[in-house]
Image 1: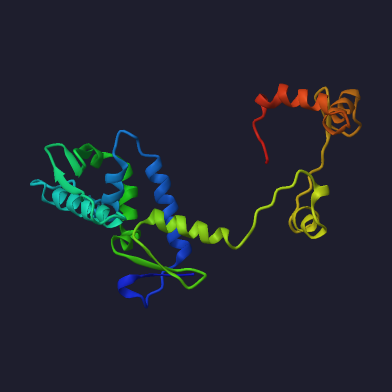
Image 2: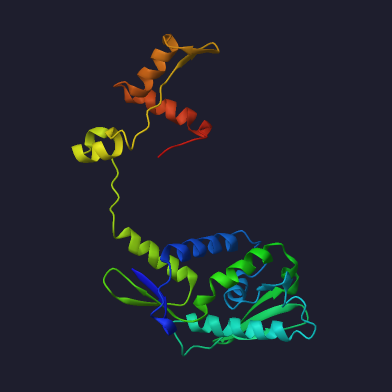
Length: 251
């Protein structure tokens, strides 16, 4: 696959680096309080509103709100570019005394979203400021050339991440086995028997708090019989009784 900006198609971009940044950005947004509108935060980040210059957030020191108004108008413009139906009513960027606002008409209703200016005082702003620089390429269309040499136009980091994950899944298949006996020899070697891939742990018995006891006692034999024996019912009862106590589970 190849990835590049549409306006400068000769400059290839590093797919893995951008996939990592898009994933980190996604996780950062998820960790922001739901009291703040994340769609506006997303848009402000992409258009560079949280850019920090000489340790100053320019949009915070905006006495006449000109920078804030310019930023939210760019957010509306950017969000409109992501819409599949270009004929529907468009987002409009506005301000009131305390909030960034985007709104649009939807039939007889007006959809309005707000983000308080107080968000500019949050510590997360520094992190978002870093993403402003790294993800600015998504302000304009980018092109991803997939494994079939198809050109996919991308405008959003989340769309980029989704396509990368879908393309990655095409290169491998997932199989599940109930036990080692169901595997073919080559699969058994690759997943379990190959010393380069497996990890062997030595199990030591511990009786009455004594460590490194290698001889099992009657209780050890009993639990082994329950978990590995031919009688299914005791094993089922054991699992139902102890499942809630599990803290580490490898599936």
